[in-house]
Length: 186
Ligand SMILES: CCCCCCCCCCCCCCCC(=O)SCCNC(=O)CCNC(=O)[C@H](O)C(C)(C)COP(=O)(O)OP(=O)(O)OC[C@H]1O[C@@H](n2cnc3c(N)ncnc32)[C@H](O)[C@@H]1OP(=O)(O)O
Image (tube, rainbow, N blue to C red; front, side, top):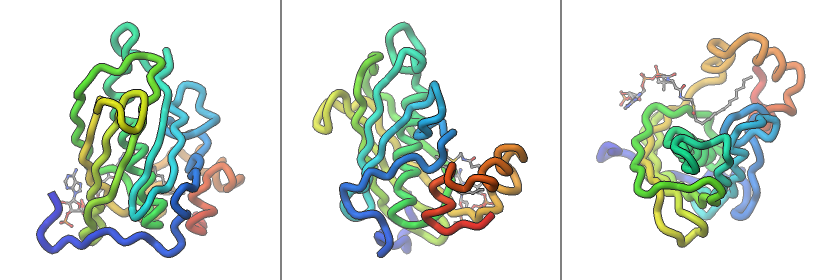
């Protein structure tokens, strides 16, 4: 829960307009990267205020039980959607805590409609919530989550990421949309 002196989130003046398809922040991201063969390839769209909508289709590679999505995959979809809120805050942040409720089983082939909103900001801490619905934006709730993201410097990635992957991004910054959008210079 946000502390009492947390402030409401403020949409950054340079945030993408509502309705803008955000695209992958990194082509190898398991959540949104289009070069990641078994990833979720989640497509997120900027909403009003500090909110996001996103969709992903559950593939056979995402199974846990036969014909059903793995819970970890569903948590990833929530995590990725919540992470996309950073575009609207124009902040670089990572998940510190993700509390997930699995409400209904999600069959393979389902289009999961996700929505996320930032609820409060306190210093480096970003509080947010998300929900995933089956089949349509008004469909039955399958999963929901509350999250705490923590703002980090770029050094979080350059100091900790595997060298060859960091080097590959530095050699071709277009592989990582974030480096362009936030004018990050690793
Ligand atoms: C070339 C490169 C370009 C890079 C361009 C950028 C790319 C952008 C990609 C983004 C990608 C997104 C993808 C999807 C989102 C993921 O999945 S991100 C991946 C999963 N997450 C992680 O790997 C994070 C691992 N954890 C950590 O590194 C560290 O624990 C953290 C989260 C950075 C926090 O460490 P810290 O900076 O030392 O902060 P710390 O002082 O401990 O905590 C700060 C505050 O947060 C609170 N806090 C911290 N953790 C927690 C927790 N788990 N529960 C409750 N409170 C907590 C603390 O109590 C503290 O509160 P206050 O005292 O200020 O009130």
